[in-house]
Image (tube, rainbow, N blue to C red):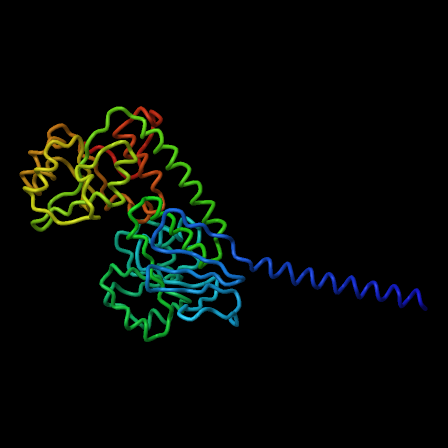
Length: 366
């Protein structure tokens, strides 16, 4: 009998230990994957026990928790993670979900205009993703039907978020568009990863992007001849010029070229033609991104503004071009700065890439 009770005691003790072990394992499973923000300036992360504090800009603060009963600091909006349903307002936001293979989480978008992704279009067609309307004209009933846990918004857009706020859904600003460093913009992959429970995958994806980008950047930094490049074109009487601090200007520099407004301290401004011509007339290359129905050409560029023919890159056929009607630029470029960089390096310094390299976004206009 003593042996029996002794054996029973041991079994009870083992079960108790196992239960404690299982409990500890579950807690460990809830420990948040560490996130290190290296380039992005629009968000920061601090971990405290099982609560992750995420600051977006200077005004928005979120506490990401696994447990609804978790206590969060004052001034922080509690968000239960991982979220299972959300709405994206921009292609830039959508690119984060695409690269993380997380379309299942997206239940609403604003529009399918100029949308290339076949999976997203199929989901819209069969109703798995709904269209909530454009900025300023959202349909609150459709938003409610999508039943999002949070909605990622872009403060740069026209807004119209008041109607959504009244529904009581948490609005989370996505400031990736403000980043001035190409890798900083791509690092918002980690931001989305935290909300959808894919922190590890997001870090791994970003690490690959960072590695490829910096390796090519180091090669381009060693070139002896750096061409000059200008950017943009006339629209409605003004030339929106990328500033010297813009992420695109940084990509030019990282690709071994000098942007004509390298010393400008702004991210962009509208200039008169004469001012831009004075800066750009003798640039070696001219980068243009637009939406053109059909095949864009030098003839079309001249037809839009006859004075365009006066630029050196026009005369020497060194216009670098991307047509958003034919290329999913905003669906992919935000999370592919390494590919974007390679496109430019292939043009500025073709000896640095493989001979059979096929560009993804930009190529010399024929």
